[in-house]
Image (cartoon, rainbow, N blue to C red; front, side):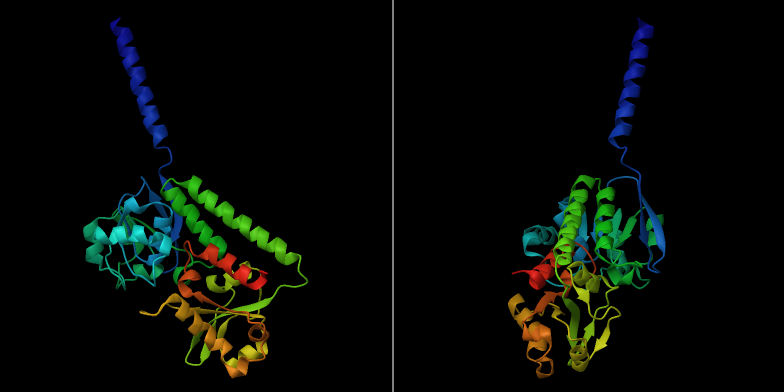
Length: 326
């Protein structure tokens, strides 16, 4: 009997051990990220992160959107206004004292004091005069991830790179069911856009520009910002991008012009959009450009088309609807 009890106890212990292993079989998880020098770096997570510092608004919004409020230990660097549907969640972070900075990155000392197990950031956050390179944090046991399209980090910067970021976050936090569904929906939208545009005689020609001092900067189609216009079904009028005079835009003769703008403090979104559109629509030199003649000038917040995160997919849909909607 004694031998039987010992054997049963051993079997139970083995079962419990096997259950524990199965329960935690998702980890370790290794992702391929980057360092400040844009070099690929493999980062391994032995457990689901519990104390995360988001260095920028883009990362904070991404985690809030995915329901990961509980893991955010610190948030920083607002580029504009937090997305309206996420504002209550963000305000809860502020009330809990988790807003480390509003503009600029928090100091290395502040982040160290939080003892994070994951820093989710832009490449610029890991400069030597900011938080320091990822290797130092990884050696401390702090996982790091840099968004592929932030600060021109990855070689290929497009919507697929943004979706790859979602896949990595899904793996890191063991929420792949959620992120896989997001990715599938985004790809289905892209296929729908392709199908609709392919049925047309030809796609519209378009550019996305940023006005400054009476001239314009045109995003190249190899940037995330420019590539989103292509994903929305346009033929990009200036793939190489670059600075443009109004005369250059006349020569390009685009059928659609998208103008990006940044939030101006104390100015409503509607006013900011109107000012951005006016830089094109009210320029007499551009009066005969098809985009102006047909009223195909759209304003987008730069935060919606830059760096990655949750705003990119809906921006593609919005641009497609603007260009091809009835």
